Length: 108
Image (tube, rainbow, N blue to C red; front, side, top):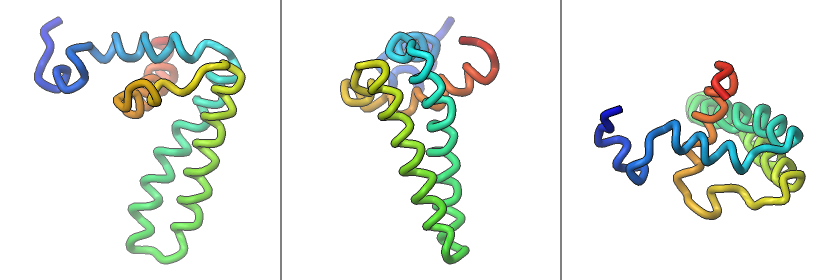
């Protein structure tokens, strides 16, 4: 597969390579479950946060969703007995959503 310039930003790895590496750090069923709930909560919270710029009061919901999503992430890693991948490499913050999408699509 020919890699475009976007892949070079991610260390020359393909998205599949990143997702495979992410998956190796997320094998425990409780961790996978927590990430399956936590990742969409975080993404949804960011969308709500943007909307809250125009609708007062929504920032509270955005904050609660964000904190809940991250709490689930760290609980999951407690079961995994591993620190989150993004402590090692910040780019994993962007891989989690791709991992979740692949999981939802049944690709992992």
